[in-house]
Length: 294
Ligand SMILES: Nc1ncnc2c1ncn2[C@@H]1O[C@H](COP(=O)(O)OP(=O)(O)OP(=O)(O)O)[C@@H](O)[C@H]1O
Ligand SMILES: [Mg+2]
Image (cartoon, rainbow, N blue to C red; front, side):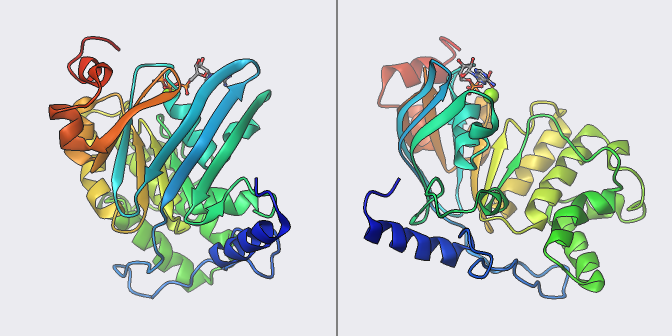
């Protein structure tokens, strides 16, 4: 999506810096972690910028020229009625959208200065840098709690001792360690729904992403499990940029720094969460947040 050769080579160089380049030699290895289980990774969160993003399913034009920015180390909530394009938008960010038969995207999705749709960019690295947690917890069904978290780390060639530390740290980071430390060899699917969702968050965070996409992560959870995930977000955003799709307006108000309102595939309004809920600029936002439709 870069027009001339110079721009393309600049993008390729930047992609190398991010570890997103196609060439394995220039890809940044996953950072070796400090041994302490409580130490934080030092990797920076990235700014995500959508520029003129269009998405289609065949003839269905599901996203229409979205321009939107997600700030590093902040939680941005995406709200809007069913079918407005929230899931489509976040699947475009980590290039999952194009996996759907007949689906395509146009425009830019920049991770800092790198357009993740640039041909020089490695799509596997994009999905590692931009982790995703889904509505329904989806632990790997045949794997233990430990292996669910370890599976991605192993691909980075971590040593055995390092692996144990990183699994522990990821589970601590997801607020799950104390509940599972004595049953790490048991199946992940034996956990409660809320625990499974935190396991999936641990699995995603274990490979040290720069951005975390969450598509209604609490909609299958009870209020206590929901509260635990919400509490986690304050901690997770110290490490990543968080994009949170939610139908729950109170949840957006509780956890999001900014909120964006989508309608029929278009961005209606984005702003500081408290302003979006108390003094929205667009009457359609006001109607939505006050429950007049959707
Ligand atoms: N896999 C798909 N194949 C074809 N069309 C799809 C697919 N997924 C979504 N769509 C269409 O794209 C549009 C946006 O859907 P999307 O799932 O992004 O909405 P949403 O805002 O996430 O809705 P919800 O709140 O119900 O999850 C809708 O018209 C939907 O029918
Ligand atoms: Mg959705």
